[in-house]
Amino acid sequence: MEEFDDPVTVSADSIAEVVKGLSHGAPVDRRVLETELGNHPDLIDSLLDLSAKMTRWKQKDHERSALLESASELIRVRDSKRLLQKLVDRARALIGCDIAYLSQYYPDTDELRVQAVRGAISAKLKELRVPPGIGLAGRVVHDRAAHWTSDYDVTQLPHERRVDSAVQAEHMESLLGVPMIVDDEVLGALFAANRYSHDFTADEIALLTALADHASVVLKTARLMGDLAEAARVSAQAEESAAAQANTLRRLVEVEEHLTQLVLQGKGVAAVTDAISDLLDANVLLVESTRLESSDTARSLGSPMTEDIFAGPDIDRTDLIVALEESRRTGRSAEVAGESTLLAASVASHRRQHSGLFVRFRSEPADGDANIVAQAAQSLALIRMNEQARADADNRARGELAVDLIANTRRLEELEARALSNDIDLTGPWQLTAVRVEPDDVAHVRSRLTRVEPRILLTQRSPGLTVLIPSSVRRERPDLDDVITTSGALAGTMTVASWSDVHRAQLREAEEELWSCVRILDALGLDDGIHKIEDFAPYTAMFGSAPEQVERFVERMIGPLRDWDLRHSAELVDTLRSYFESGSSVSRTATACSIHVNTAKQRLERIDSILGTGWRAPERAFRLQVALRLAKLASDD
Image: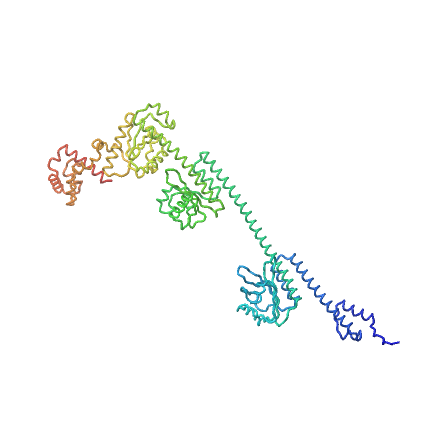
């Protein structure tokens, strides 16, 4: 029988002790195993292989734990920049590389911009922007796949000066890049780099790819969160804006209703301006455009509120007019140039020049305040139009009454039934006044006169107005003439007034006499002023039917003397006037003219030679005196 050598046996306890060490992660060494287990190569190789696998399993477990931790942080952390930095830190730690960084891809410019870095020694990498298609980063984005190199300098990839400068500043040799992709969209790339030559393993590439996937989720989530935040912000702004607009609209509606009520209730301009002043916390002023255009400066408009409203040092009258023109054109209020708290609005009424509504806010105007100013201007325009319509009706009634009274074709009872009020006395007697006024100013003069005294009657007659003042009114108001004068109602007009009582049957004749006197004064060149017709009665009697003859009469009577004075610098006209005024006394004439008696005689002799010796006859002397008085009236004007 064949005998075999006994096999070498290994103690089970020894193997159990080695396995226990492996399970606790104890380091394994072949020489130690050979000492403990003897010469059993197959067993030792198996144990070493088991040790390597367990090490890899632990590494995988560590990597899985790191990935799970990243996912957990992704859920908790809302700061995307901080989370990306954590991912870069973890990539550097797990792979064990010198440098890890993450670049975000911008499709609009097709470039990569570094967002997070760990392990860099230069600021160039943190600020790096990789142009399209350059270097390893460009290849990763273009191919959407991982790329790596163990020696960056010898790669055949396209180089660029700034990229190469950043790589050289970090002394990079080996470089691994993996794309960051979500929903087929490239968001960027994650990189691991060493300052020595290194061949990256499949495990390292897989690990960096997994971390890149996490980074992709972070960027995508951050983008979505940003979009949501922006949408929420826009929504909140829209909601806030809508609420503000609703409040503004509600306020505008309330103001419009209030202003409309003021108009419907027949309130005047003051009620509207007071309401706007209280509502807007502002000073309010309504200025007639004629005053504005005739004023030299904004502050010279004469209103007590002018200084409060036009307080700006640079406010010019032209700026106010320009703002009103813009408002007139657009139908809205307009800001006065350089004055954010001063708004102007045009107030228009039919057949009237535009007025200007000026509102000076005590603080910056709120939303909708400009519309409120425009609404106020419209309400004021309606009030003005209503007032003008009433004034037109009043003037028409006054004019018709005056015409019928002067014509004396209607019964008094009929006229009294048409009277505007019981205050107007139609029984007479009357005192008449003729006012010569330009056609464009007739309505203005008429309006001011009726405000001074509502009981007068007026009728338009070319070239002006005939005014009938009840004598009873003048007796009640002995100062009426002074009031009319100081009111400025007759400023710039020529007025001829009669202080004599005129009964109804005499009104037509008296009116004709007044206007005859107006024409005579026109012929004499008198432009304005208030004149009593009684002072011109002789001239009216002489020239009433032909006032154009006045100048011819004067020229015919004393024209030769005026020509002589003009050619010889003499004073024959004045000497002749003094002669008549001195009772035809030569000595008194000399005294009045401050000349010697002989000089006076010589002048009178010269007058004899020019006019003929018959000028002293009573009839011719009277006509000469009238001519001299008319010439004196014309020269005094």
